[in-house]
Length: 440
Ligand code: GLY
Ligand code: MN
Ligand code: MN
Image (cartoon, rainbow, N blue to C red; front, side):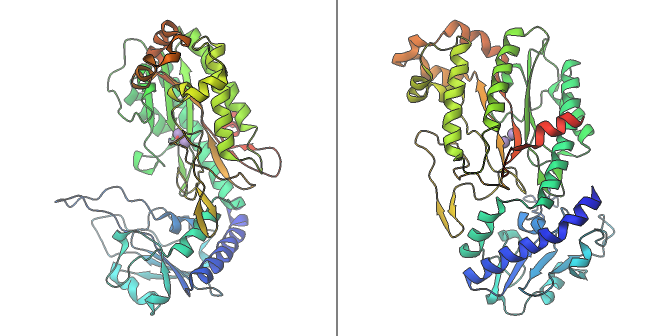
């Protein structure tokens, strides 16, 4: 793994330099300055929230725990890392950087956060400083110039081979956790027990994961972002939805699987249909494919699944038009993924900005761009039995075209989501998730 990364890193860095050269020229700046960020302290407390490095910093360096450090890049010069290594016996002090990337940087070690200032370019007005408000240090304040940020965010969708290697690793780690979680579900564990089995198998703590894991048994599968963990197991575990990812040097995987308990044959049949539909959507991750069109296509296909299984009697077209499909599939088909689980730039019309609107009636879609080689997206269709949304359908004129007895019988399973992370290439898509499961 490290040899592969070492071989790929120089090209990754060259790509970032090239993108940044253009971004700085567009914004009229001489330097890019990227703070890693600072931990945020809890109100009235001396404890910090878990620290997450600025994704712009992680883009350049595989350093996920370097609070108070800074990256400085000036076109034509070697990038500089100002690395904070405080004199501190209360906390673990970050080790001096080592690895395949260090000889590509001028590295300066500082002992106090404020000492970084002297290592930054003297004329701050010539710097594009990309960060949040917490990283501000005396006069050094993030300015996030839109012309620079727009260029960088638009191009972040296109992953370098180095980034893809890290995303493959994030998927391998995540699928190891998913296997352990499925075993824990079959053993009748509680949601918390399943979650702990997941963390142990991945080898990461909650704060290191790219997002809060969703571990839902039975009806809990109907809560889209269910992040409670019941401490005791239900009397019967009929169904299990797990949406959980892992990190690799700051890159995310985002994986969902749904399982039926041993007595839930009717639910398994529905899972199989959603799984087949999901694979057919993955097959359409091709250069030139409009992602919003694929999302609308998924609505039609899932309405077909609902009809095939007897939940609805209307045609898929009228199910989509009337909003019935949205009651069962009330979220987007997926999103870009990379340094963040929901990667930036999903709506951006071009490298100079602009917005591509969502299709009308689809307020939760997070990606409206056309797919191109190098992009990584999730494909995550679902069918859920959500009381609130079903209640809204009850009073509608087409309610007679819904088999409520059948629908009500499935509420106890919560819902289904199947989610893979997929690389768009010049040919067949690469399914990071299924490839990683196949390696187990
Ligand atoms: N786990 C968050 C998502 O699937 O988008
Ligand atoms: Mn997702
Ligand atoms: Mn997910």
